[in-house]
Image (cartoon, rainbow, N blue to C red; front, side):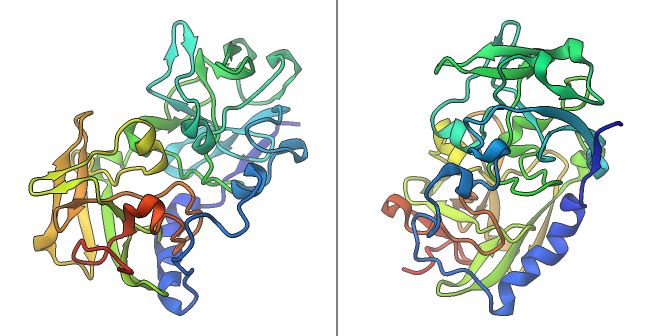
Length: 304
């Protein structure tokens, strides 16, 4: 029997339903630096295979699923999307995602790809690469595979396009890309979130943060490398348009990042999400290191 799952409309439905929930009186309190129930990574990042956490359990199955405009993507036994990173290499295969990066992007670990139950993916494309810790990571077409910490249920594709470098795998080992990517809309929405008041969120209702170490005159992001893994910048792709709800357009701009991508700014401050925020209105990034704060509609620090 062919092992195929249909994704649950994660990409299309989130922007309509998730963001609206923030203003319904069921906002998440923003005074926690770490999630209240965040102990083991397996709990923090959702269910993991074989009862373990996503960074240590061995994968047992590999299948494919339909991901709407992304087309067909590769998934694991839990229906979690498997991604590849442009910062890795395929010849030779090498993973450049360790430490905080591997916490946000758990590697897909295997003992031997021959032991995987595989449907919809050519087994000839499968291999392994030995990570810095000695564990074997699955490769597809030479590229190391990962899941994403924000994907907590079957059908999530929250990692697609992150930092302009992370993409879901197609069954032939290539990058999944939406035909609508060039015309992507970048949304910034004002939402009331207790106890912070009005803050900025993206289209999915995820809190947008500002970083005290950045500059505003001129606007400049100082969050690169591992920092940008934990705090993904809100990017403005070429050809994209802004959709502002409650935000003064005169306050919105962009700043050029070190990698050449454009990051959205409000009030001169670059905007980011936080990898531990898992659902709309989570504010686990509020106050982290005394330098990260949810952004107010004018680019100020919320809750201060």
